[in-house]
Image 1: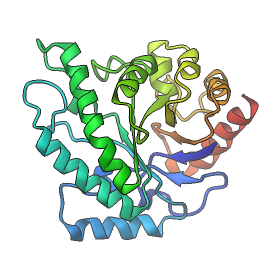
Image 2 (image 1 turned 120 degrees about the horizontal axis):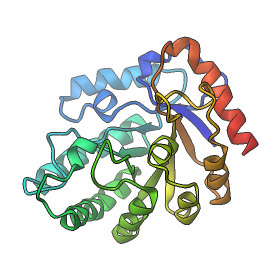
Image 3 (image 1 turned 180 degrees about the vertical axis):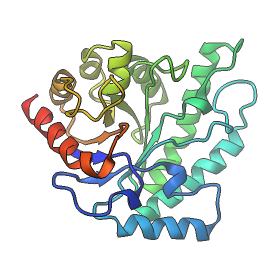
Length: 257
């Protein structure tokens, strides 16, 4: 697997052994709500990083709703089109649709209709993604962070309904661990998984630094023939000092799985 870290390009100032790519936020690297000058500045920062920016997360801001009665599909699609076009220019290949604030289902709104809305978005975004050479990955989030698409199994159902090769699934060992989802969900959805995140459940520490064993998740990924990107999405006490040890510890667990 290719090992990356969720971080802004300017925060990784020198090469780290074993680190293959960066995954900043969409807003931080593609600036979809800002003009071309702002994007050009961030593009220069990305190109100056010691490893390439290959993915971006936090796809949609909380005020641009993707579920509920106030969804504006035209506004969402206009935003997504800018994101995809700029992703192609920046070399970003994977766009992570977690965005818990955007997709949170309002109180009193039918959850089944909200799920339908997410599928409808994904179906519309598939051709946009294909045209620009990117892939969207739907990220299941633990129940304390969002009230829809909380498990890999639930995400897999929506991805199968969307039925587009540029619309795929993310597996995050942190969210799975926090909600007690077993590694078997990864095996069951293996043909859909195109990206992965990891962190320890206690304090969201980087895997390998806090003592948790995530090998069962990585073994499930291997069983599912997943050999793509795996990003550390964690909280750090001292990013510069901890990152080399985190990358080494994660690589050890992946190799041992």
